[in-house]
Image 1 (cartoon, rainbow, N blue to C red):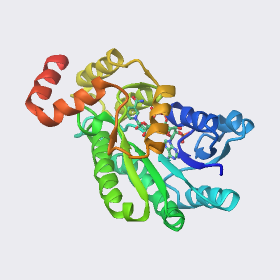
Image 2 (cartoon, rainbow, N blue to C red):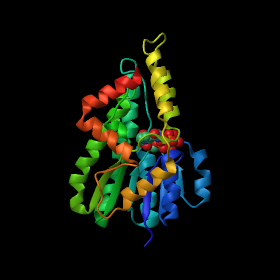
Image 3 (cartoon, helix red, strand yellow):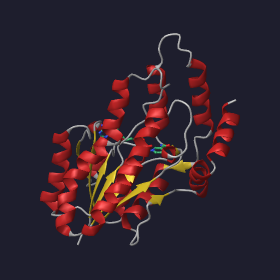
Length: 269
Ligand SMILES: NC(=O)c1ccc[n+]([C@@H]2O[C@H](COP(=O)([O-])OP(=O)(O)OC[C@H]3O[C@@H](n4cnc5c(N)ncnc54)[C@H](OP(=O)(O)O)[C@@H]3O)[C@@H](O)[C@H]2O)c1
């Protein structure tokens, strides 16, 4: 029987790469994003695309209903849609921070609530949540973004405990710096969030410079393969990492937080 995956945020980056990769593996792929003009070529390839805003109940419900009515099942849900609302904590308007939670955390929850009854009826399912190494490590200006991803980790762990009795598992992928549109959007937001004559302008420039230096060599296509592993491992792990260095950074921040902070202070000097 053909398997079915729903992926949020397939107009660029890892979500788009994952849509193509899962299709290559024989999956029926359902997904969406707000920039529908970017979904045309995916549609032509046979991917089931639609306008999707994960903060909007109607388009979210529509996507799940369509997959279920056309295929009768949902094997995998990938909660990928997300972005960075960077900026100094003193200056990011609370409304912007809330909006980011609405996409990165509540957006994942909204679609998961629609998919879970389907997976429970089936007696199986996998929910793959795209978090970040930035749910454990941190740097200036990412406060609210890291908070959304740390919350997503906790939410996923609790969900996993609740639904494994039904044959459903919830896991986390923690990408490190990966080539996509993410950094550009995060720093456009950081600059937009600065007040006029902000005392954080220099720090913002430094942080942008740091991110451009550590932009990383991982590609969205490589991360798509990791998403697939997280979705299909017979014995799923709680956390998935692309590289040993991503995993090492997370371990350092958790086990030796003072060493991590000293390293960050050194880099930000
Ligand atoms: N790239 C990195 O270095 C990195 C590292 C760690 C974690 N991540 C996480 O990995 C995931 C994928 O990011 P990426 O690197 O592939 O970034 P990206 O190229 O910017 O792609 C983000 C995707 O999310 C979609 N999206 C954003 N808001 C949405 C909304 N309200 N409703 C539906 N879709 C929405 C975007 O589509 P539209 O704008 O068209 O809606 C786009 O397709 C994100 O959760 C990100 O936080 C990225």
